[in-house]
Amino acid sequence: MRLFAAVLPPADAVAELGSAVGGLRERPGAERGLRWTDPSGWHFTVAFYGEVAEDVVPELSRRLERSARRTGPFPLSLRGGGRFGGRALWVGAAGEVRTLRLLAERAAAAGRRAGVVREEHRGYRAHLTLARASGDVDLTPYVASLDRFAGRTWTVADLCLVRSRLPASGVPGERPRYEVLQRWPLRGGG
Image (cartoon, rainbow, N blue to C red; front, side, top):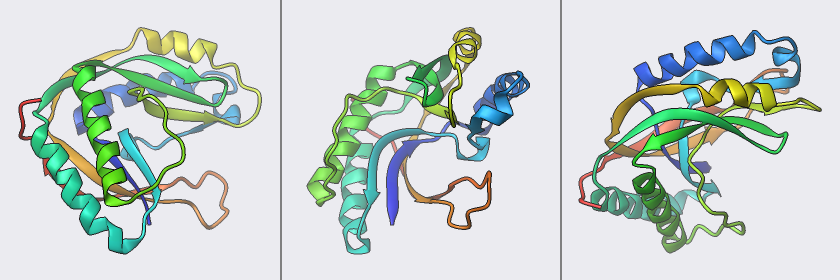
């Protein structure tokens, strides 16, 4: 099964961002050149595991629970915007981003120790993907609009293990579906 560890923003933070994204989606060409992610699936991926054998999930879960136990709750907000080249548009984070990065390091280590092997390792960049470009789209005006976005602060209180089900039907516009398999409260002190 395809898995990742994530931090999920609360419903009111999602609604706040949704209002801002609604304006971006109304720009000329926004629906043609961009595949917008669904707000119900908005999340901060802290560790991507890819395909994980079912018999590995219990050990991964134990290790993620330990990561959550070692990390205390922390303030975070959705803020600013950016892009990965011409491929993806995202909103960033503000607040205790350092703690989010630490949680990401712990979640990645949990995967390695559980035997989940990932070839690529990049430095963690806190972001929530809003859209992916399909073709030649200039993301500059979208990023400029998002630069002014500053959402309310909330307390990150848990770590989630999420299953991603990729579209299989071939229906245009179909999006991945996300299912939270487990959720662990953050309890530690950094």
